[in-house]
Length: 187
Image (cartoon, rainbow, N blue to C red; front, side):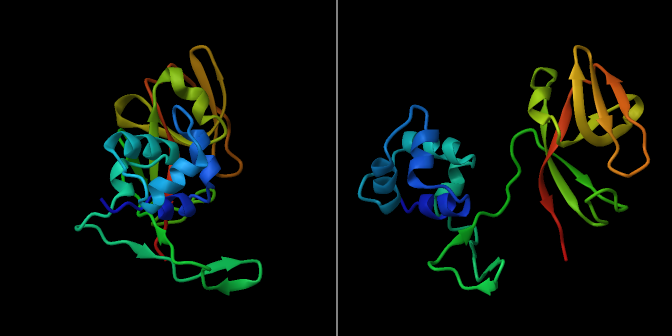
């Protein structure tokens, strides 16, 4: 099996040690290196374990015939654009389980007309994971509120609007909320 563990790890800007520490249970950086280079066989168990450590789907770690990879042509830094030191690839975004999308029709806050936002859904017991993030919250009759989650107390949450001049909104017992996870912007 041809793996893309190294490419995905580098795209996430993680070291071998970072990935080894994130594995459950933790392993050694040498083991991750052997799995990357193919000197150790990658079982499905290892593939799933490393995928969780990298926060990607296991299928993102293998070369599939029906998926095109996107090579990195240049890196833009403080001193301008330059070629990467070694060949690398970008992992194309894939929807995660339970994700929802928002289309931006009119610019608001940091979002521009035409942007797509991919959001991760959270149940009430997970709302703390969305603090200080932009969230979508359902309201009755097919309406929604979109803003920055700034506070939560038992039975209610507080949002501030993304546009200036708006007032804080307090919502009681929403069944779920979705926090912005990825921005897709076409130029």
